[in-house]
Image 1 (cartoon, one colour):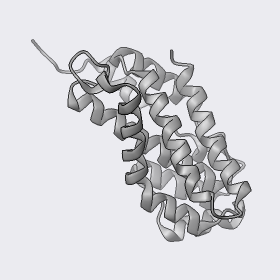
Image 2 (cartoon, helix red, strand yellow):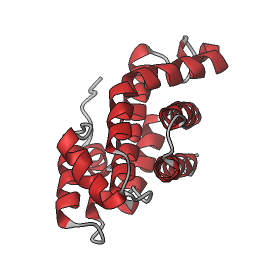
Image 3 (cartoon, helix red, strand yellow):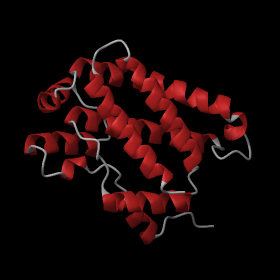
Image 4 (cartoon, one colour):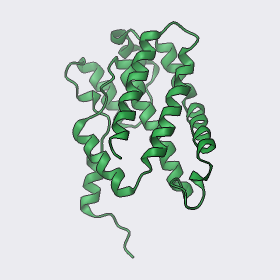
Length: 192
């Protein structure tokens, strides 16, 4: 059996770009370049990039750096919470079985958190690209991605990320971060 992806599938994968904030012409060109570069490399922002973006958004760059540093642990905690809620999800017959499928979900959580951090740093919660989102939705349907599990994990991750702001007085930052996560949850739930 040939498992080579079809040209149509490859094209769908190419178009499946969820993040679109870097295309927003209302942002400064330097900020769009930072966001485009980080997103192209699928990486978190470096200190200089965070500081540059936060100059305009007035977010606390130290809190965003702390959030990025703690992100692997926060994702792990969200994963554990999801498994506690749905214990059979990673077992045979579960929607996150086999292990590779579960790992793809955790990677997606990282990327969704990553672009939420971008939006928070840039001061904009409308972080998705309409055409790219349509391709993501089609791709997720074709791959039978367990949207319910991904959304649950994303909501857990959102709550975990809020803890970083619970000690400070960054209500605007928290509102932005929450807005980015809520935007993504809404877009994920529209796939069902």
